Image (cartoon, rainbow, N blue to C red):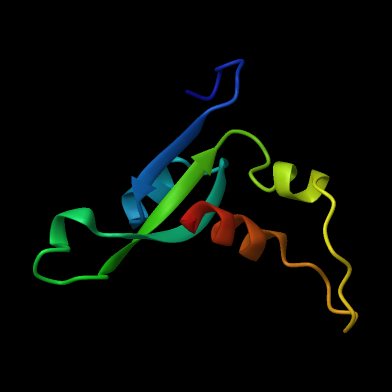
Length: 86
């Protein structure tokens, strides 16, 4: 898939095999609610990887953001993960 000319975004369960398979791609760790387990284990989450052949944080960096008053750097990865969960 490395020779694809367009943008690719994939979602996989996070495991070493998938990380090795997509070595060199952009990886973003997040978690999702485990839909199949909700009946017996409500709220259970599992680790997931978003995998892309482009800068996954690009869209967040381009949006105007509210200034921080404490001088801390903006955590773009945290902002993206929070927007995915909504």
